[in-house]
Image 1 (tube, rainbow, N blue to C red):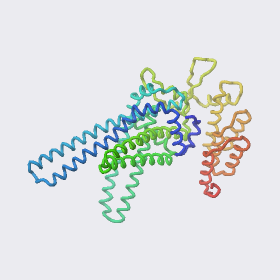
Image 2: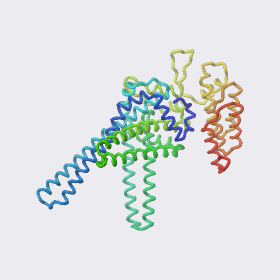
Image 3: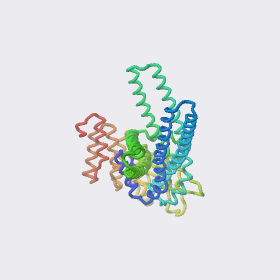
Image 4: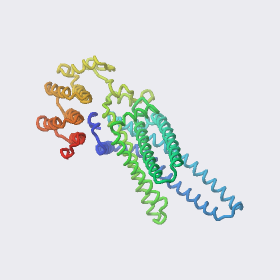
Length: 461
């Protein structure tokens, strides 16, 4: 990812798709290796499960028809009954085995993709061998998070079923009861989608942070705030695409006897490739959403700290600590070439840091200067102190520090939140005319959002 961390918060659904495609194509070698090792077996197991389940269920269905035409308590009837019972035991044993393999491969694939993208984000060297050595040590954390989410969904479904039964018993078979039932089903589906989104994001949290299980679910729930609409839109489209592939595969391949063997094989290969691409794309997208949510909440991950925690040290995977995600920074002092000092910042250290960044004396601090001043603008904008944010920009200009699209867009976003559209348009003018910066869809998207907030759609159009 070649974007600045502050830029990620402005990405919408299309921007997230674009970023995911860019990551996959830019690093196609490593993603191809992961796909061959993990995602191809995962896709094959899923489609094979549908095909084999279809065959077993068709045999059971045929035997049940034969049973209905057989005299009760006859030797043939008892034989067919025993045969059906044996077939049901076989299919349940098969489904349990499939679920175990599918779950393990899903968690391994998630671990591999998330770790790889984190390495790309930190500009850290990543190889297939390194990824595969880390993955087995990470997926156990994902398993705990999955079990917690599974328990939540299980309880949620029980409560939903009991609620539906209670509504049917109290209201009965009336027109009003049907309307209430439909509304409850819609609410149930929305809740199920929400839990699914939180779980997927919690999987990323479990890999990159020091929390997993219940804490990862709580962290994920907090992260998704503010980006819920984008997340729902993306996950809903991915789930719809997944469902379409599954249903069409069942109709054309599993139950497509009339199409002929050649056509069924052709359709099978087509759906295999489509599902393969969808799984890879979905895993990359959900990881990008994690970084977007972190950026939206201004929990910008320091790349050097993240790189440190992605190392496999003495055979143990070290997850990223919460303190590394927000405030703690790792500085390298030229005076101490081989010494790395970890500083837990407070008000005093930040004051010294800001003061130093505003001077030209300490050359080694120049690379941190723009970042620190950006954070000052960001903080003032969040507090609604727009004049203070402008003051930082003027200070940057006075000190000869370049003002880029990101710093100006932060101010534009702040003005739009306060409904100050005149100031917003003036900031855009300064960007284009005085600073010669190229505005993009993010700036105009923020501007359009501002006009929508004050219900001036004509100006927005």
